[in-house]
Image (cartoon, rainbow over all chains, first blue to last red; front, side, top):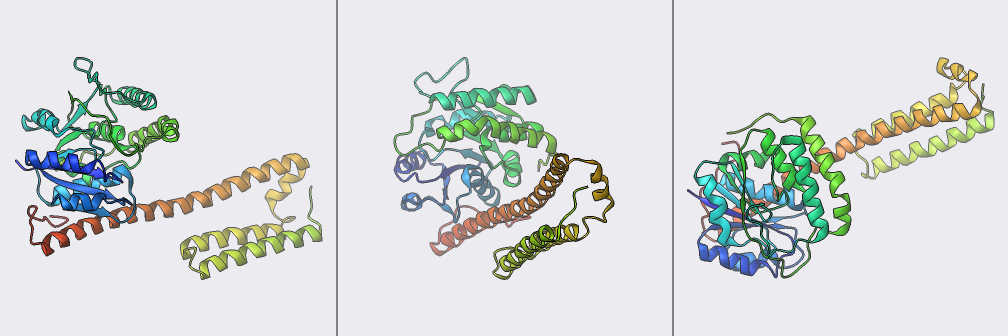
Length: 236
Length: 132
């Protein structure tokens, strides 16, 4: 079973070294998707002997992650693990999100900080982000009946069928919640498992106050678009 | 009915003529694609025609029963819909090009990585060609 860790990164020069060291120590294959960084993110990854997909123009998190999925498809990987380049996701939790995939219980597993039975009480979520998560979780439940408590988590594992599907169909703007709706609509099984995350140590989150204010509108428009589009299942 | 005086008609034609000239300038200087230019020239040509045929068109005849303020509202709504249609049409082109740029950027990144890997004699697994 070949597992690839996909790390989308935009100006994460300071956070990448620790994350890449952890990944190398655990022995996973990895690829860094450098989303037109203006710092030395790509150089840091190359110095760690990790392959780098350098995007010439900034595609945002959606386009970046999708490039990683394309790489996984073409290199014949069986499982893709999505890990944020800001170092919030600890590699020690990879086996936890990998387990349901390997057991054939799910096509996509979301690492969650807010599973009611085992919430990550040490993690401090900024208020605006918390509101955004409540909103998108509620909308997702309304549209699908699916209860995912950490819809904005970028810590995910996908089997080959799911990431092959995403390599041709992946939302662009705030894709985390929309991608869950897309998977559910297309008949893929989604599971949420509790994990612990770290707080960002360097750099700034892209989820600013302005973006947070527009987030509900974007989620509603994005979800409405997907519901009207109603894609047919393209499992391969 | 509101009728155009020669001065008003002349002013409208001059303004629209300038707009057509500017549209053509944008196309000639490669700032506007030919597809988009054709649509806008057609729209501007239609506006010039309306100015010339103002008194003859049946629709304009219907407006003779309206007061000046009502006529302005009707014209403003029609004008808005027309401009909105043209802008949406242009946005479709922009969206198509955005999607194409995204695909090209992704393919370029994958190709670069593949070349880098080969030049360093490394292997990160078999490369499966697109479409296989």
